[in-house]
Image: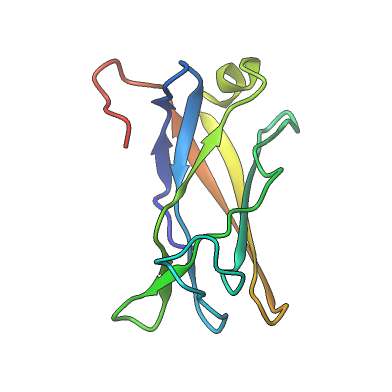
Length: 130
């Protein structure tokens, strides 16, 4: 998992706070990034855990393929919004650490898991969402 040490909360279309998270894999089947319905695409699940133990996101894995990078890794073509639900979870996450967990299962049932603790900064009024 390659991710910055600090992530800023962003504002979603329905005003919910979220973190934009991306992933990379190595040694797993990358699937077909041009067809999100392709059954060979790996299942990627992203979940966050706040300092108070609240779990955010992670209920449904994504089935989007990865694209090859020039460094030997395959990169997720989409990324995912890790939405802070319940809404009160966002207040707990401001200016604190959140443990981000990414799990990937490929079409051959190979499994990989990575965790990283990131510091979450509050939303900026001028910050644009992806």
